[in-house]
Length: 514
Image (cartoon, rainbow, N blue to C red; front, side, top):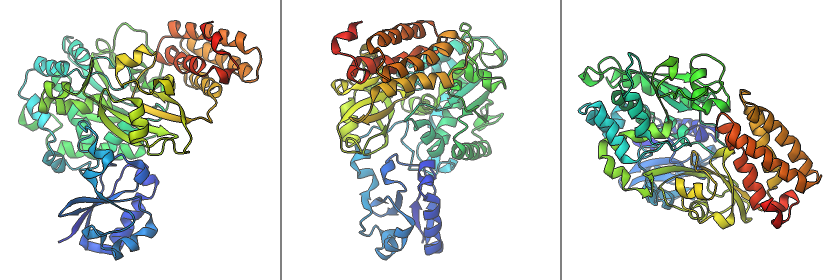
């Protein structure tokens, strides 16, 4: 009888040699091992991490390099033998054991493209229940769960679905925004590479809920591995009857395909995404009309993020109250948090809303990789505010972050130690906006370019007080005059850097009120 091994096909693990390790183990062991290419468990400092199925459970070893293979076999790792790389029973590792993995419950556990494995681990139970409900009842379940958009805007998912359901149209669409472009974020990629069927199931449920029979996954062009996994999973879902003209013999129809994105950050904004999906240049649309009313090809369209849609199956399976019982305030459920930057243990942590930044940075992240004090963290991607150590005890909650003029965004956290120059980080925010702007509105197009010029003067030490005031005036224009969040939120990192780290701009504390 062969021993089952799990070796990730996650792109981060692949970049560290997972394919070479799988080939070396197969060559060494031959038919005595059955290798399953799973997703990553999210502990990226341990990748490539391999798991061996034993009577005691799955035993993890990592990070494994090709030169470690012989030693692992010599120490009987196929039976969980001792070795310096042996980590123990995977499910008992503190990093995983302290999490609340709901959306990510199968990532790293199953074969990502196997429908039978997915079903064996409670997959498609949500869809089966949805098939028994009226569309309005599905929408109500999602509404009652408190699920909000996980792409950054945090708009209630149920309200968006209800709007599309209420529209009368012969054709409606479900569009998944998988153009994950925020710095320090990778949760969408992990789902698509590690459990794509949960996304496919979520989109199918959304189609049933609003009366849409066609879905599109707008996939970031820089995710070639996700493209392969998604297409394989979609093909298998069709073959098993979970997609097509007659889903599970119910008479309901839903078709799904993947479209490559245009490689532009601005196409992560939903109206720009729709323009790109229609084959046009990715430029912001004026709103109204909302995409929920006139979206893709002018038809009512649900546009949701990967994590939002991938969370729907567990809500339909276990009920709205189950999901709503996690979290705090109006932030219900869990958030997949991605730790990156100057941090010792980079990886994905799924926790209920309410955990603090300090807990994430130190209890999970282990502090900075450099060993120096963490001076600042940027939460929510390149448009997120920079938070100083004095705000590390803020709980992850949409409203609590709003109170300190910050955003949770997509849940990415990028850490910086005390060697960071915050004036240069503020300049980078303007530069990023200038490069990625679609150019449709003047505040974003011109304001970002002027911002870079003024920041260069501040960095050069030229009249910092006068130029800091100019940056504030410029930020006010961008904040209130831009058509979308790219120009409208660029002031968040800029002003937070000035407010919390004035010394890096040549400013005195008393000048902050200016």
